[in-house]
Length: 560
Image 1 (cartoon, helix red, strand yellow):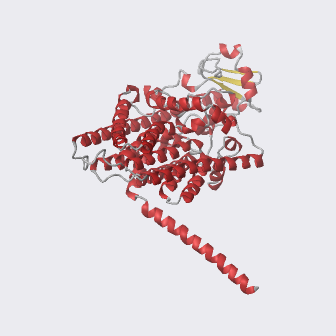
Image 2: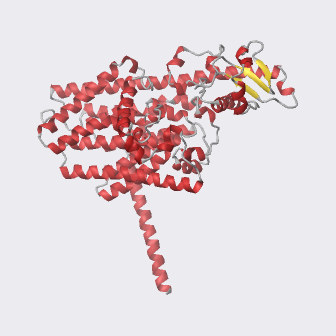
Image 3: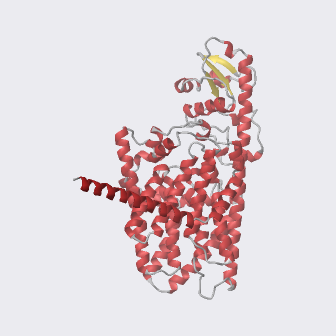
């Protein structure tokens, strides 16, 4: 008996030891495969672009402003399906230590981009190598990354979600075994979705771009079919695993899915019923991202010229390689190639297929921001369009490389300056909002508000951005709305209370108890407030029904 127990213990120890050895070996292999030069350049460039945000600890005008240095993810995150956020929040003790969170986020994003660089190994030609570097720089400097950083309390989760989605795609691509590719890919995808569901777009876009690369390289049909099976299997299993874990946690905690962004109505049946409208919405949103004004991600996008040329240059390069496939007169590979290229725009916003009621805004733009970098990596790694177009000797090949480099450089140039505009808007908006709050605080002290034995609850009416005291440069109004600090959302009384509470907690630290949402909703409609002048005019601070009302601006009615 004792001998068998000793043998059993030795066997268990041996298994643990071999598992530890395998993990160490995998870590060493990953570190060896990591292109450290590429990673450091991506990290350094992104830190340079977002240095003002990091150094000044800038936040956006919504959740980034509302949260404190300690934020514990809980019921709200779980009701939005972000169950893994509860784990990461617990592991970092719910602290949002700036600028540490921002740096960690940039490290994770840079790791993900470096992994993509490794997956799409470029042809060793000067033009394609430059294109490979520009692709990574375009993504790490995009406004969506700046938006992630402005949510200080969850920037780490945003960065980790992207990194895990890339790791999931990498597992599918690198694993020769179909079963292992599906299992590992599904596991990491489920974790990514548990942090932020929209990163599904990055996962799908990367796999689709790599599939197109396999087609351009003329891989065998068996390999293509295996890749399709791994990709679809990992996506379905990953989504199912994520949903299963979510349902178990919701059941155990007694929390229900919230209506936020249509989360409560998501189901396989609804997805199938709304599929035609959802597909149309995906392509419409893709078009709007590049040629509309919903998201300002590039200073040159309003002219339309940059993205018209980018789509023409990239589209022409893809079509030239597609023509080679079509000339082979193989119906199966031709179908794969045409379908994959048509689906790539949809893949960049594929989460809208499930959340068809969702309203698109900038944190959800990770997939669309990755679209052109993915195309650049794809074209840089693909074979020339014909056998005569090697080493850039063919005139058409030289023109193509120059056009792609021009498009990538233009996108990078515009992205960097758009990120700079957003950061400047956050800085100027915060400074102008603080100035108004300082004046209000000074007036409260002068009027003896703090001398009263029992201080009345206060009610601040209106947004700072509409106050006559709010002064910024014109550039403030060219930024994305998330970056316009002081342009508080007026969705309901709670959002206004969150915003003003944060101002007097962090920007102008002082004890100021705000009235309840019910009192706010009742008083906001009264004629007395309508007739009040705006601060700092005489009569802009009055007592009403036991509440000290301070009218900041005329822009105060709750949005319908």
